[in-house]
Length: 239
Length: 239
Image (cartoon, rainbow over all chains, first blue to last red; front, side, top):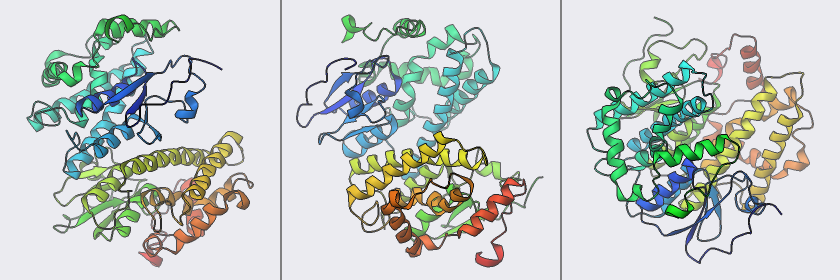
């Protein structure tokens, strides 16, 4: 049997999240759980050496995965987050207007393209690819304009909504890009509103709970690139 | 200016769908509109030579795109279909149970992987790739089992629900695979329930409205592969 021991059954009536401390997709779900003040347990999965039992829980071995109160497991961060917002009505995150909700879902998809370009930049140190830089820069401009058009402190209005939370994990890690990518990528004057938004997000109590500083993200990335990701790095400080 | 003339504004209060007669993603939206008995206009887009004005409507020039009653345009078939189901409450298609809805959304994602393998088979005539065949066969087995476990005529219960409609366009085209793919791919005994389901779907009045026979699908595919897709093929018969 590979990996850690299978954990005992979840506490009855409590959600269990299978997660990984450094996985931005898992953080999406944690942000939603914390924003909605839902009680949950976390089981962290070592993605470098997944335990055998985990495939019984999540059919493709993916994190995040959520074990619902009845024992059913769902995966895919966006599906889990939408589920939580529908099931737990308090502190709703999606717009109550179906058309606005649809437009926000399209923006989340558009942000996924920015993320893909970010990963390409991070995986090609030294070889600057202007197409990827441009994809990130143009993608972020869309969000800068969107904040201007909405004229609210957050995409969701006066508090972070689903769109804010779904894009946040990569914005929290944006400093990494400056180290590995093109230094001109994140010009401050081009993204004034986005940077203000980022500062506001970092001050939100429910966002702070899962936040890690840039040094920790960079140290993790370095351990990952060296082929021995240190998932327990922060155990002594915040866990 | 390239392409057809820009169409006049939609009739006030009526939805307009930008579509293509042979696009299975567009058909998803038509299936939902017809199942929910929503009134709509269709503007068909020549995908081989997209009109310039279309990029003002759909930012990436994609079909399907839906022009809502207020003039806003949304795209991505799944986002449009979810929007329609939320906005127009009658004849709901998604399960009212958020967990079941989440599980159905995961199955739709899983079916997308089957579709990707189908396209690979269709684009590689003569070169049989067993991996793709296996991906289709294994993918379909998941749905065969799912029908058995649910024990209902449709995935959605006694009538087609969102999952039924989202996977149908490719099931309608399944006969094509027999011509171009591995002849053993769609063994009848392995997919007994799925074939029964397929026959029931083909009898549903709201499904029949957008249905085309296998010969038409094959003729279109041949015109597409020859580099001159005949989007108007069915104009004299059903439009």
